[in-house]
Image (cartoon, rainbow, N blue to C red; front, side, top):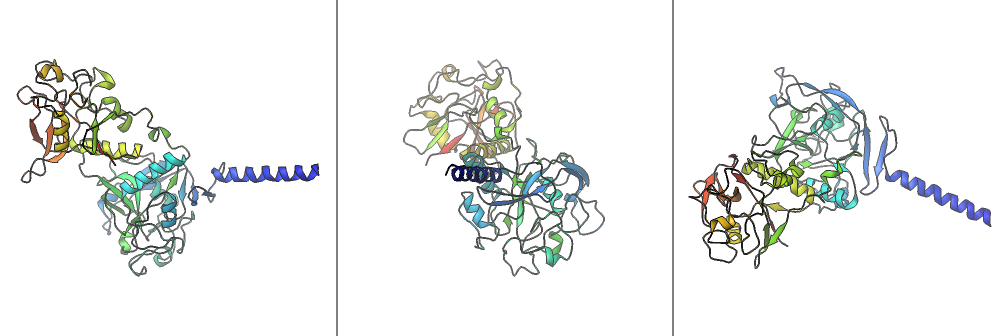
Length: 457
């Protein structure tokens, strides 16, 4: 009897060890190693470390200059999805299936970059996963199996490799039906365009050489375009090539776009852990929104963006962030929402105005005494000050007037729809609860900052 119990106990231990082993990637993987991540049933293939030449040299063919210059990139090893994320897997991740071509084993389509980023961050936070999109360099390295000169993602005839305009019958297909590339990856060419992590730039000049994703510098490119790779079921042959780059804005959803995932054992969990990021919000009584208790500080900006663009830094992390354009603020909000899983935004002008007045009819935001509530040109000694040092208004909001002028969401008017509204002005001539100015959204200066808002459920 004791022997049978011992054998049964040993069997249970072996089963438990096997289950635990499957819950984590295999140790010391090599080319060809595979692993099924259990939480969403993702088939993954090990992509080994290595260096390759990314892009193309323009040679008069049907090539785009955005594939230039050809440059050397070195990547660290990573686990990449063997297939594009299917509709079944997307639902296991917690997403509602948005696809036009509905079939559980077809790639999910009609997903935007923002949809994917928000879903990945929620998945990682809730289930302690380590998923992300591949960088553009990682995608091309895997597609070309380490940098081969093959025209498509794999060798052989295109019809054997990809679903595209000439053979797709104008819809997506079950993943994995075509021939894989030499590293065992399916549908890298065709079926759906695949979102990658990088923001789009018109060429590879100054692109990262370490395999990381490229993010646009502040004050540079206003449009938030992100890169797609691989072509789709509707693409002609020239757009199925291994080095072709597509791009579109991050909110775009259409039936051509899907994605595959990287499982990153070394994912920087600090980008998911937001415990040190505490943006205090105040619910506005009688309204369905909340607004930042303070202007966004330099410390908060650094936690989200990793840099500090501000000119005035004498009060450290508690100074309001400045030197940010309206476009820069949109980048901050995107990343903040990815990190927190919440939906922060700029307040509308009407929300800002109502919150400023605090239900009290005063000349300034909270008082008829400007010195009580605001840092402005006559008392600020030509610098910003730590947030929250002045008297709050009736809602408990600080620095609604002065310290820095604040971007809001609105266009200036119908005729000048390109320009954006700025409130909470800091100069003596302009400071009052009613004062407003317009500025182009690419404008950045040491007197412009912002605070965030959020719609309540």
